[in-house]
Amino acid sequence: MRITETADLWYKNAIVYCIDPETFLDSDGDGIGDLNGLAQRVDYLAEIGVTCLWLMPFYPSPRRDNGYDIADMYGVDPRYGNHGDFVELVRIAHDRGLRVIIDLVINHTSDQHPWFRKARASKDNPYRDFYVWRSDTPPDTSEESMFPDSENGIWTHDEKTGEWYLHHFLHTQPDLNTANPQVRDAIAKTMGFWLQLGVDGFRVDAVPFAINQTTFEGHDKNELEEPHDYLRSLRAFLARRSSGNGAAIMLGEVNLPHEEQLTFFGGSDGDQLTMQFDFYTNQKTFLALARQDAAPLIEALNSRPKDIGVEPQYANFLRNHDELTLDLLPEDEQNEVLDTFGPEEEHRFAGRGLRRRLPPMFDGDPRRLKMAYSLLFALPGTPVLFYGEEIGMGENLEVDGREAVRTPMQWTDEKNGGFSSAAPSKLARQVTEGPYGPAHVNAADCRRNKDSLLHHITRLAKRYRESPELGWGDYAVLDQPNPSVLAHHVTWKDRSMVLLHNLGAEPVVVPLTLEEEEPGTQLVDLMSEESCELDQDSSTDSQLDGYGYRWLRIKRADDPRLV
Ligand code: GLC
Image (cartoon, rainbow, N blue to C red; front, side, top):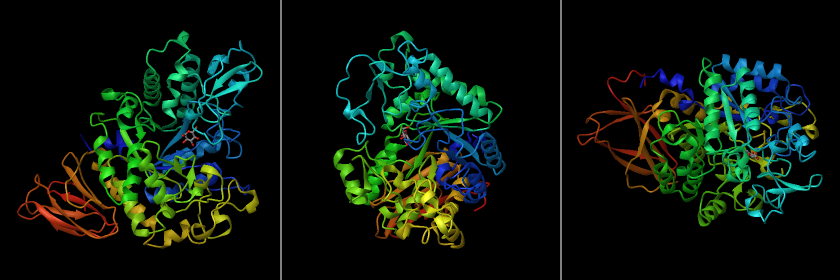
């Protein structure tokens, strides 16, 4: 393995930053964020050390589901700009060394999409089979809906043709029939289109639903031997279309336990999704944070499949644009997290998660926040940030549902947090008020304050990039006696690090023995530049403050890096 490989499989030590174009920066004063605004802030993101932008849906859409209900997969919603603006943005990002991935929704469209309008026009319309229909009355499917608050089930009766269509999400988001080769071709074509405009890959939405059995059942005429063949074919298409342009990726949303995720990587062949968000570790991390006990996190890391090959990669995250879902945890564990971090009914979403950002969950404790972000960058895999996390934005509980965490980016302490010059009543979404509002939390202030979360995250990003062993290496959890501590070791080629995180509020001493290392080896703390030395038994005691963390690089004589 060579350091040059980190440029080929670039995503393995990327720093991904998710942006909702609607709420990032409004450049024309209409109250809605846009692509031109976003382009103005690429330098800000480059300065933090972000290496890959993930753009949430910017396609034309009635926006019943924040743009995940797409009415034209080739389009740019005119409220955000046009294709020219999109190309300019991609060029600016590339010039600053950032790649760009975009959301690809293969499970459903909006009911306003021309395909669905035609499909529902008559039973024999050529587009009928683009969606999934049944003629018999469906059973009770209320348990299967992803939005049980607003939907009774996953089938909706269509008055005109008298049949029911499938939708795992809102009834305005009919599920595509991905068993239909014409649908597959149409989706591949949209991928080809955006690749041609320069994107470096896709965040693939709701993957398990898109290849789920309900979609395939009843469509024997389209004979699909194995649903995962579909993912394989998309990956192969991507490889063909992006060769010469640097490998493009598919980062899949697969909210399933680890052993099931293995199938979505393509098992040991690794020929399906390039990356997957690690939802299981995310949920266990929140349990560990709630208990101030690292055991659940250790269990999650140890349960990751070990034999996924070199190319597949896990993406780690703390918060994202959705609710913090806890659905992979047993009910008692879900309740522990809900009680600790979302004690009020207004903090919760659909009974299964939290519509909160991280700082208010921690009562704003800066030590705990800094430790949590250190952990995010230190976990084996690729870190993903949601916009505003780097400055410590909070949620706005006045806003309905999941929109609570999707409020405008807070740039300054000026009107509308510097997001837009429009009248506040015209804004795409209300700006957060109170202690997490722009008067107290904004990017401009953070840039001036060396102790800010922004500076901390910038430093983490820098250290992460200097330490490819974090994204590439093998890892092992180290034994030590403090329940509140995660101690792990990563190693890649001849590079190794030990990472210590104290999830608890009390200071601790962590005894470490690194048998493989020579006595006298130096351990350099990349976060403080202090170093210590292994004694005769290759041991040392490391002090950690309450919510303390250390990134100890094992300094070897032949390590070409500067410390
Ligand atoms: C994904 C998105 C979510 C959306 C859903 C349906 O889970 O993250 O925001 O509502 O897919 O597209």
